[in-house]
Amino acid sequence: MQIQKSHKVSKRFKLLSVAAVLIIAAGTGAFFYFKAQSQQNEKNDKGKINSIDYGPPTKEQVQAGEAIDNPNKPGSDPLPDPTPQENGKSIVNVAITSVDQDKTSLRVSSLISTIDNSGTCTLTLTKGSTKVVKEVGVQALPSSSTCKGFTIPVSELSTGKWQLTLTFENASLTGTADQSIEIK
Image 1 (cartoon, rainbow, N blue to C red):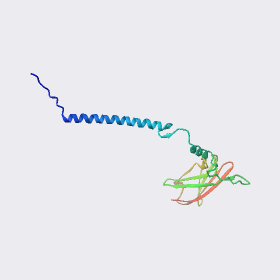
Image 2 (cartoon, one colour; image 1 turned 135 degrees about the horizontal axis):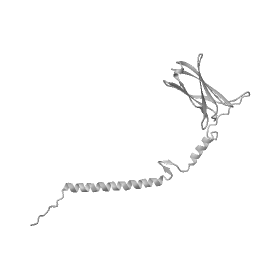
Image 3 (cartoon, one colour; image 1 turned 180 degrees about the horizontal axis):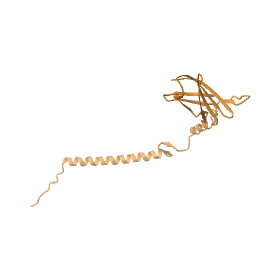
């Protein structure tokens, strides 16, 4: 006597098998698609790493660099010439560009119309007979200079109106700027 085995495969098993094959096929297709896209992007970005172009500079980039190296070149605002004085140093323009106060400090920034990193900036704050004096060095920038920045603790200043006088001086140049402020 022979026993016949039934090889019935359930519909559910067939459906799961087909779904698994489709998922594997879709995943394989997506893998090869994105791999091809990546290789194409690498060809398009020749000389670029992480979308930064490390290739040779463009004409516009070269011109922009030259303008920084030579601030008095046409196309950029020339620095005013220092005003010569008969008995002393030439005078340059000095400007107080910002005065910011928070609960702990007063910060003063400036701009000096010369390119130089020598000299001293002196900030004098005056209220009545009270004077607070701070000194910092000078920092050259691409097209001007600046005082290295003043940070004065507000604990050194009383509330009310103060007069700021900022003076820049080096071996051949000098300049001054004034401004009134209110300490709160």
